Image (cartoon, rainbow, N blue to C red; front, side):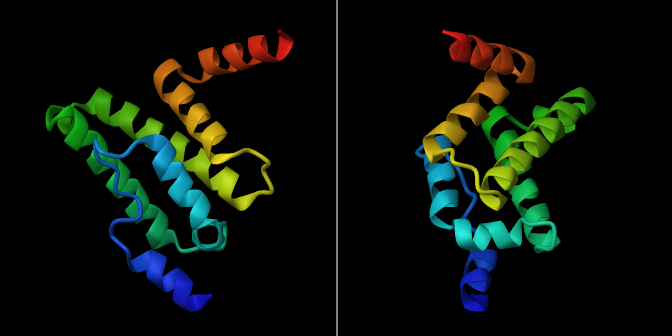
Length: 130
């Protein structure tokens, strides 16, 4: 297990997302590496790994939307919030016995990022009631 964790922890490409990849592919990768990631991201996991994932996600945001998004204080606040929210959702999914599939998690992440939590929850509740 230690070797597997070290391999994932050292890999710089694990959480790299570019235009050729999409969020569902990233979540699928997380699912494939669930055993290791659930330990690295647990409450007793590797804090440095989580900070590195956050840094990569923030840099991907800046790369996608341009350097102005890295310097504007209001956008920085939104970026940090969006990154933290997404990472917490992934951590929850990976570290619990959640029955959700990678596709369902990706859909939830997309809904939160595009519609926000209030609209995403309202949409989910409407779907449950139909």
